[in-house]
Image (tube, rainbow, N blue to C red):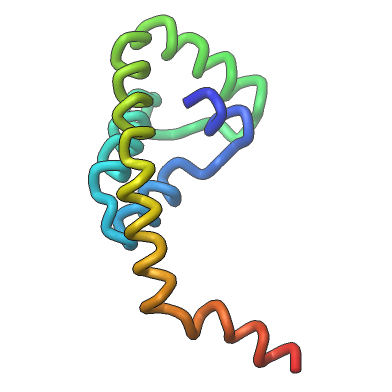
Length: 101
């Protein structure tokens, strides 16, 4: 999960997006990772965030490794669910095309 925090990916919003497309298992995993952060708050400051992540990794290494494996095991389901969501919400992707014409 280091990548999430190095790049400042929005963990809570990403989890919510997984719920919206029906990949509840991935969303639940990301929420479990978020639960490890004090007050479920990931610091905005990169140095502070990475220092805290390193401490969390040292303390919860086995759990984070397992959650990361479980998270990546949802890739195929995520791909299928996302493709389905896109086909149902096709208008969202073409709204910008129509506005630009």
